Image (cartoon, rainbow, N blue to C red; front, top):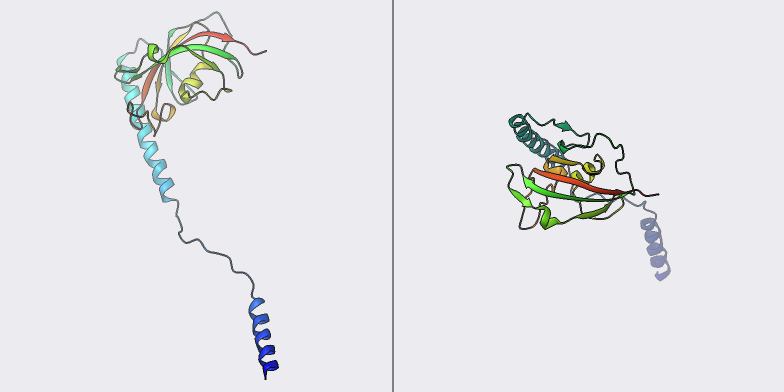
Length: 182
């Protein structure tokens, strides 16, 4: 009897252990609606900021505004028409800049920020993407004014205790020197 019970128990155990593994199913399924809503919200924010910049540009038609392929607008305060040297990846540049709200109220002055040294696209320095992109367009001695949509400035994060999220800015940059990387 014990022998039959043992054989029956081993048979049941063998039968249960031969079951194929089952794939685990996710507990919560997402539909991607959050991403789609975020994309739509960001498009609306950009269109609003673009209309604000176009209004500013129309108010000062004496400047020749250029649309950058990097997503911002700019004009030259001081332009060098002789030199052809622009910073390339790995070049060390020295520059100064300020940050203003689009109503010209100063957020960070050149004195607060100070003169900056930057190795183009190599440094882990915390520069907003609009400034990094603009430097690559400039020659030594040039000064440009940028109109930066919020996604090219501080975006959703802003600056703690200074700047809220999704705020468009303007910046005036002067390129002081380029030390070309050999």
